[in-house]
Length: 206
Image (tube, rainbow, N blue to C red; front, side, top):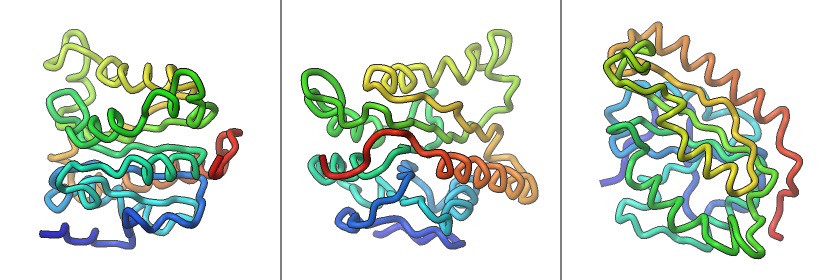
């Protein structure tokens, strides 16, 4: 069963719908997006922004069989790689990890000849179930959100990318409609700022 579209303007790209280059590729990885108010609000905020290409991984790869050459081609075409996902058990969802494992390969993302991501920017936008003060050494979750995202930050560094300050929506499940609207507005503004100042890396098929 295909996932229902977001309530607003957002339209995710099909796996083969990638001829147009844009400054920012927004990788959305939510295994239950149809039930996520915060996820929908964020996608709607990004949907009509010039220079943003949305790619829904769970829509494109429900069987987890990733088209590696196509995904690598997409990555080359964008200066900013944005990852939008919910924090599940203190980590990104399984398909996002699988996508990175399968696509960000030696000789492409790192190692000898692996400079396809060098100079690009990696931006994380995540939703979390608990309040901000829970992510503290004296809080319920014991560690900061920066610490939980450290593997992605190190991945960016290892691949020669610039790590952008993450955008976190805390207490996402319990937020009111008006609070989510405010978060979506802040998210849209952040994406605009990223699109307006893309990385200096060359973007193309090379």
